[in-house]
Length: 97
Image (cartoon, rainbow, N blue to C red; front, side, top):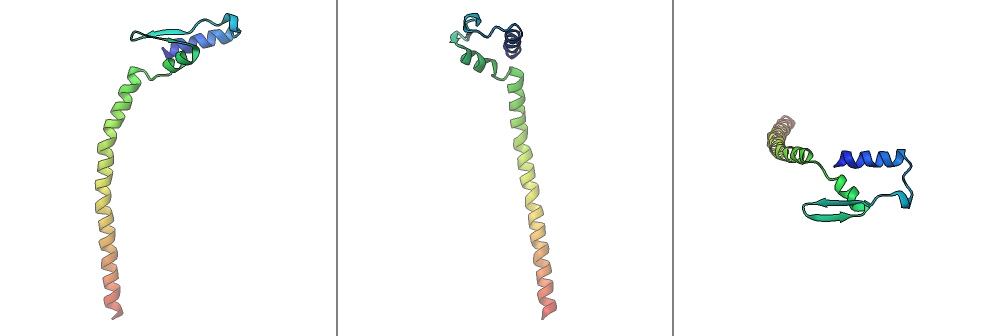
C-alpha cells in the first residue's frame, strides 16, 4: 500500500494535479471499514508492512536474552573489580602498619 500511495503522490506532483478540483477522493476500504480523506489515507499508507512487523517482533524477542546476558556478564565483572580493590586496600592497610 505504501508503494501505491507514494506512486500516486509522485504522479500527482509530476502532473501538477494539486488543485482542489483535480484531487481525487481518498477512500480506502480495509477490513470492512471505510476510511475517507487524505489524512486517513496517509495514515494507512504509512503503517508498517507484515514483513516489517515480523522483523520488529523478532528484534524484540532477540533483545531479551541479549540484555539478560549482558546483565549477567556485568555482575561478575563488577564483583571481580570490587574484590580486587578490597584486596589492594587490605594489602595497603597491612603495609602501613
